[in-house]
Amino acid sequence: MPIEYEGQITEDIFTKSHRLAMLSKKLLFTSLFPILVSLVLIIKRPHWSIGDIIITLAIAIPLTGSILYVLQNYFWRRIYRRSPYLKERLSGAITEEAFSVKSSSGMSNLPWNHFVKTKIGKNIVLLYKSPVLVNILPREFFQTDDQWQEALAIIQKKIPTK
Image (cartoon, rainbow, N blue to C red; front, side, top):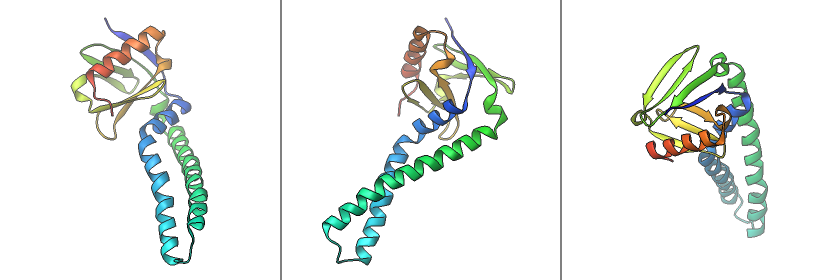
């Protein structure tokens, strides 16, 4: 029996999906960039003590994370606002055989083996057809928690999680 869903990707859902998609990359960048900057400073200033290095890292890591967070949110919201197709109403169904989606732009019925990976967040699932093509499936699209849980069970069974 198909599990039906319907809804519209909002700006909030769009930014949440990008946070989930970028989580591991953002953490890596947030940690590595300040460390690399600190190493360059240490090489240029060999007289620095361990205290100077710790203070530099203590300032650089949160600062880099904050700047990255603000810039990413700005660009994600900008993309959403400039993309009319993202605001279209979507509907579809999830079955043991396939994932279907319908909008005013078209209709698709994809067998599960067409997806390469999935990322699952608290109230959102990203279904990847390639490293950059993704279907966003938020909890809000389902009428009940039981439908959401059933959809998650099928997705987790059919697509590798990464």
